[in-house]
Length: 547
Image 1 (tube, rainbow, N blue to C red):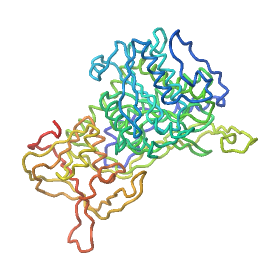
Image 2 (cartoon, helix red, strand yellow):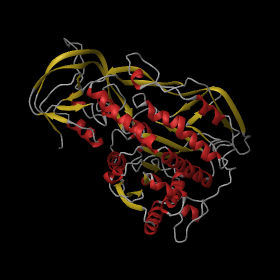
Image 3 (cartoon, rainbow, N blue to C red):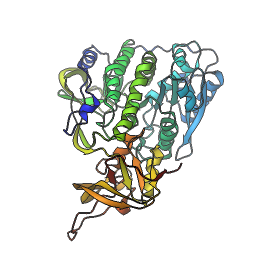
Image 4 (cartoon, rainbow, N blue to C red):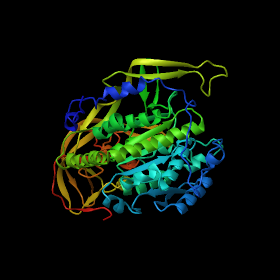
């Protein structure tokens, strides 16, 4: 079964997004899998003089605290000629956010890494403050990357690795067990589009935006037993299909094999029953989906309930398996990602295809098998019997299906007053221009049939526009009108943020409230949404904003 080409899913019909290769899915789930905690954990030897994490030192009875992490990283940097250590941002409470670069030859700037003509990979963890297990394994992997003579260090001849081991130290340090959100209680893994918090701003701008990794992995705690690691890739209809297929059909089986070699197992996030397995959300504001929308392979890791040392080892093996796969398939990964980036520009340059403004999950085309565990959880009474159920022929609810599509324009036009919206676009690195001469243009516009407000995370009144008719109008646009072309590296993200019906657009996140018209009974005609679509390539007098 071959992947469906992008051009096919861009037709006006509301098609399903893609199908998985069934063999890899069924084969993994049909194994006789151990319960977490039964695997014998074996760590690599530590070279003389190299530091151990606080968790290693205390026998994995407690996690490595933020200050202890910094001491470990600085000691590690002092031993290694293949590592650089830096700071990419600061939290609400003033904690510095570390990142490390591992490479041979050693680099310090994105252009240097790009000049090596090899993959750039970003490994991260702990965006949810209380989700700490895989962070411990990632820090141990950092030592192996930094230590000459280790198999991990040998990978650095063919890959540049960035590591951000703790995205949310404020949440980590909020209590003994940590909390999901940051110091303000905000879920940072829902901030990738609105970028309201300095932690994610720094991560997106200084690591994802500047380094443009071909692949990144985001480590969490969650998922379902009896698995030691749950995973999921980008699952949005508008991301390039190939970026998800490369996970499902190649990277995830490599992770399965790596963990299986030590008696561990992996499967898709999140949980299931006897009929279907449900996966994580599709919103672009989630890290792994944001990855796909900026043309990187975005991977989620989740650590199900298990002993800390076992989980740390599972995370270590998962991150390592990704790096091993990348090195073994470097040209394939780079070619796939670069093709997605080139296709993004091409779709905007001669506008074609459609944008999903509403979508849902459907079952993948092939049934799958997996294991369920009943009982023995943290919330079960002591003595509750543990039962493992082998489910066969179930549905995997992971296929993004568009339920409403809109035509892709050549560019979007925003009022010259929409400075907050433009500031948000530019924070992502999206190219924005301004008209330097007035223009009369034929545009596509949305009539507003209604406006609603709802609560979403820290916003008590996000703005939803109900679109009525789609109309063509000739309109006059003054000097200073903002122009956002879709023929750019971040064209998929730009379109999602400027289509007024998505769940992560600039109107939704209250960046244009003052210009959203409210229809009234006395209107002679419906008002228009304040973002207009220029459907055909047009020569205009304009200048880049900020450049």
